[in-house]
Amino acid sequence: MEQNNFDIKKIKVYRTTEATVFEVAFAIVAIIVWGLIIWLVHRAPDIVPTHFDASGKPNAYGTPVGATIPCIILTIAAIVMMVLAYFPRHINMPFKITNIQQVKLTIRQLRIAGITFLFLPLTVAYMMLGMKTPSATPLLVVVGLILLEFIVTSILIYRAK
Image 1: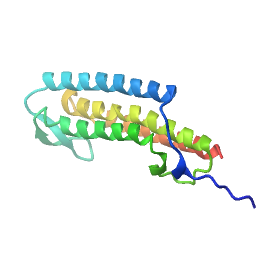
Image 2: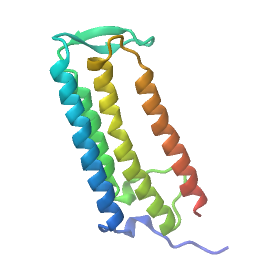
Image 3: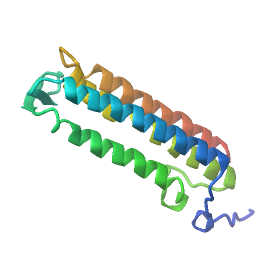
């Protein structure tokens, strides 16, 4: 049996044209998302729903500015994903990464996820500030798309053995 000497801990990720394109796209999407969030905050009433029960009905209320706190946290998580793409040794996959093609696909997966993750704060802000009748449907759709993205890209990474 041939032994694989591939060590992900020795991989260094350098800036590439693809990385720059993803980072510029991330910045553009972030600016648009936060522009829309700020617009929603300015047009929201003084009291808005800030928490929802399992059926999607509001069960806590607060100020529009306070509703941006989860949006800030979700944006930071998206930024962390973009940064993590430069440190593949810290990425945890459900299988062992055994070649450089899998590393490249994993890095691409993180960058795509970072951009997609930016739609979560917009969805949260829309639920709390923009909907006349709050519903969890937009959030469930975005979370479902993110899960589908991770499943599909993980399968592609696994098959790149």
